[in-house]
Length: 297
Image 1 (tube, rainbow, N blue to C red):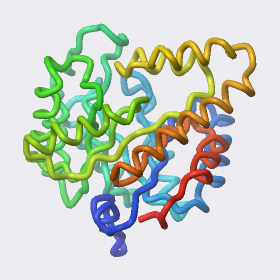
Image 2 (image 1 turned 180 degrees about the vertical axis):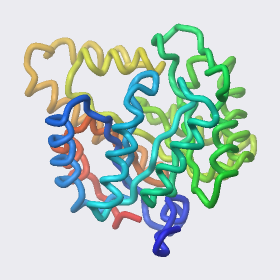
Image 3 (image 1 turned 90 degrees about the horizontal axis):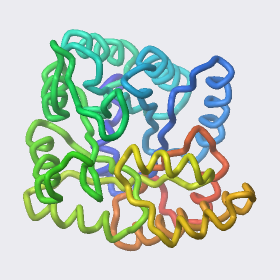
Image 4 (image 1 turned 90 degrees about the vertical axis):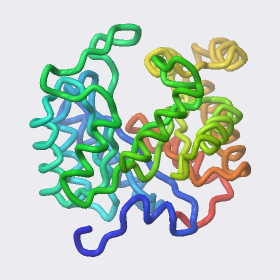
């Protein structure tokens, strides 16, 4: 790694709990300024790593790579570069990996990506591209000394035939060279622990970091849940809809629910937490402050 910097896998294995934050690439320069304000506000928490997603269908690839580069060059944070198969040939994917390497980014999250036409639509790979995340893991690992992470799905990938098959795919990604996994967001801790048990029984030994998305907007979280296949529990739907016209109350309940989930995950032995911040720092910082956290890895 450049300058002897530790990889995400090494940081996860160092003994402390991991705490990380994920952002999405804004569409405008003003949005990018607000994003970096949130990044600066979260930087003092010394997260293990931070990441920036691709937009739908890989539409923000250039901005994602640029923002990830800025994080590497302008902050003290460890960036995790996102990479998806969507809309890209294998040659283009190699080019993106090269851009990350040029920026000193050696930690990459390798994802198949969502169908460009939205949930429920058929996945179609680029004619000269890759069909599965496991193929992308192999591609990245073949290009140099990269630390590669992958996605995991506590409630199963929307297109998985069964939870067992979904766990087998995670093990296949480990065998291809993945060194850690980050889960899709979810709302019931038992779904995460069941995934860890299933995958472990099938031979998974890499750390699986649970992902948490604080609910601060009811319509937004329902849309994200539909995209991801995550089930928003009926009791939460009822509770949030009852206060949907009061954004302050929605946000307070969202922070409470996420804090309780995070505490249950840590108490149950999760190696850390990955926060889907939605480019806002306040809710994440409040949850972080409310938890009995060990020093981050």
